[in-house]
Amino acid sequence: VSASDVQDQLDMVEAELQEVDLQIAELQQKKVELNGRRDALLQHLEEACDAAEPSPSSFSKSPRPQPAMNFPWSKEVAQHLKDTFHLPKFRPLQLRAVNLTLSGRDLFLVMPTGRGKSLCYQLPALCSKGFTLVVTPLVSLMEDQVMYLQSISVSAAMLNASSSKEHAKTVLAGLTDPKTPFRLVYVTPEKIAKSKLLMSRLEKAYKADLLSRIAVDEVHCCSQWGHDFRPDYKLLGILKRQFPKVPLIGLTATATRGVLEDCEKILCVRQPITITASFNRTNLYYEVRVKNSDNDASVNDIASLIKTRYREQSGIVYVFSQKDAESVSSELQKRDILAYPYHANMDPSDKSRIHRRWTTNKIQVVVATVAFGMGIDKPDVRFVIHHTISKSVENYYQESGRAAGRDDRPADCIVFFGFSDIFRVSTMVVMETVGQQKLRQMLDYCQNIDRCRCRRSLLAVHFDEVWDDEGCQQMCDTCRHAKEVVATDISQHARQLVHILELAASLDEKMTPLKLVEAWTGRGPAKRRKMIQTTALSRERAEAVVVRLLLKDYLSGDFSFTPYTTYFYIKPGSRAPLLRNQSHTVSMKTCTSTGTGSAGVKAPEGNTSLPDCGDAPKSKKAKAGPH
Ligand SMILES: Nc1ncnc2c1ncn2[C@H]1C[C@H](O)[C@@H](COP(=O)(O)OP(=O)(O)OP(=O)(O)O)O1
Ligand SMILES: [Mg+2]
Ligand SMILES: [Zn+2]
Image (cartoon, rainbow, N blue to C red; front, side, top):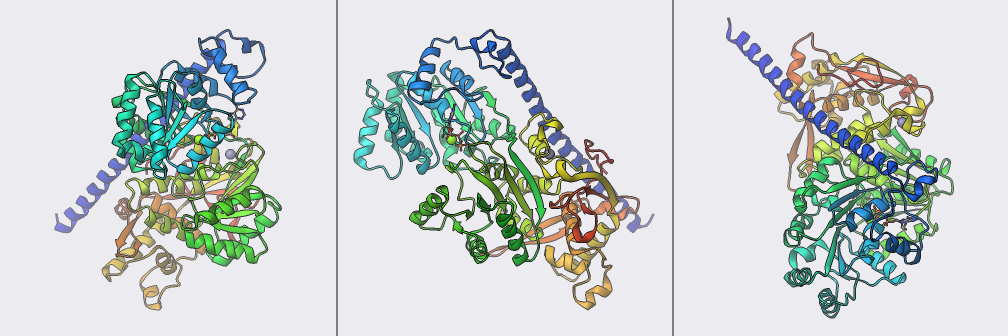
């Protein structure tokens, strides 16, 4: 046996080992999903128990009766709802949350934006002795809430970095006053972490039985897996350690099971009850479109949508950077659209002016970075267009969820999926521990890997929900247009691409994604063209193949750092060695469409299909097995 034979065999074994590792990772992912489904099913059971309980509301024919109103506090709760908050009835799950926290249980409440989470601690605060401590990440949210509570004659106060000494003194003194001058006290997590004075006051209040409840708003900020990690939230475990008898309620609009488990550990709560409202916003239409690689053309696409489908309607265009916010808004203005930028680097007064003018429909579109987010409360947002993909599915769900905020009429969520954007976002999240994994999930959503599935079902899996395909009602591009799934073999494409990369490496040259596609489609230097096999695929399709191979680890990213920027290069991925075996195949699904207008289904260049990837058999529900 020759040394090179041994080397070849060794390579194959290494490759197989890598494949085994990948399979293990896939199974672990599957386990997480199944756990989530089990919990959701258990919750359905729990709801069935509520329904079976005799209660006044079970006489009405509502499909989901409210739990029974027979706790010692029930009368007071009903009274405050009507007389203090001026609301006719609870929304789904609010009363259950109120009852659970009033009965002293620790609770995580996961409910989409704008459904009324705040009421679930504001109302119990009024039915308890002492005060409720509310931890909120943003001063502006805090101000809004305190102002609102004062307007309905509920005494509330706040402590943050900009509180005057005088004010802080009054609030701190109030904490130990048995007459409870404040029913709710809002603080930033920094205050808990840094103010010894506050902690010692809370200590005293606790001993005097005046600290009745702790609410942690935007609780996902605890976890690095959440979409909005804040280091100071990591330190909030001190609350439950120091005040173990005080019930805690954590609130968030988006958190996966993993995030909640993380929050549980960080906050030191033991076995909290989790209430999850359905993530499914039935009035939102989800769509993915292929973004034109030409800047001007991509803005044209957005402009024409706004001028036709969304004529005289209000919306948001999310962009990648502050620079994009400026440039895209001015491009839209040139096309006669009332669009203005919004980003973190603007003057606070300019920011609130834009926000106000948009809220009052003086301007049609805000072109914003993710800085435009928490605290948006506009009832008639009819579209949220992503000029660039989000960095994770959670971010996307959250950002797109600002469509049709509070009045439940139909609205559209459209994301433009661009090849080069993938790498801009990827380099941006390069320092985040799980940034690349989360970005992959977003790409999965856009490219709809392995199946041609309802966008909602892709979101549902992400949020650990049980999904039945009837639930979409044609409110996504796949359900509305997709017809059939056809698998094509892309093994030779993969081999050609890996060969180009190997050749480049032997010449000590690094390939950016754009350069790779250029070389492969024969637009590189003549000298190189002679040495490689080019492809006749269109640019759009070639790009889709590259994304597909990246997602399946035949190609992978290679970051290079300079003091000023990070570069994204492509190198052969962990599965690339498998390609040496000529019988190894890689396939990619094509999803044919009955209509036009969206990616994943829209036909590029008169072709009737667009790559949608996958090696699964030709069935909607099948999951791809390993190669
Ligand atoms: N039972 C109810 N009936 C009618 N309106 C309600 C009810 N409960 C709350 N609301 C209103 C009050 C607010 O204007 C609006 C949003 O409530 P809020 O508590 O701010 O949402 P939220 O905290 O769930 O959203 P976010 O995730 O954006 O913070 O809903
Ligand atoms: Mg809220
Ligand atoms: Zn669908």
